[in-house]
Length: 190
Image (tube, rainbow, N blue to C red):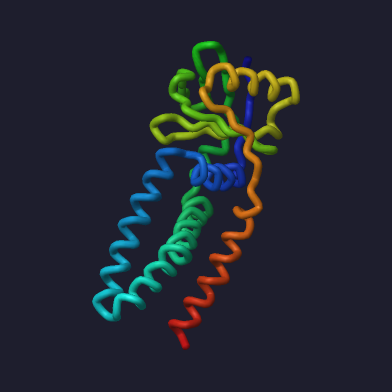
């Protein structure tokens, strides 16, 4: 099976959001980073206030400030440091051994064993490798029969194919974090 596809900047933003939820390697890195930031925040605040205030401030920073800063960093990266070369048309060749992606300038081959999970939502197929790298294929670029055949390949060759059901809490939490961040910042400037 072979098909061409072209990525747009919005595809990379969707991939970044999805990777934070499903990529096992990225989850571990984020957990370690949060742990280091919480410990550092705790010690910085502990120097200037009592234990109760330090604990509350650390929870606020860990639950509100750090996730918002992380999203902001991803947004800035995707918005201003985006490589236009990634937007070229690519071709995917899928067979029993694995997947090959090629464009005018490069070619990549992945064995099926490389992928530890695949996620499908209404708009994309996401493939995550054991090394933490991932691939996104937009469904808008595939005909219905091609998408169905590709889904069958994934079900056969990738250990875990999940259909992503968006959780309503994923919509509420960023708005709640933004509101809490505004409250926290207003306390600092009052």
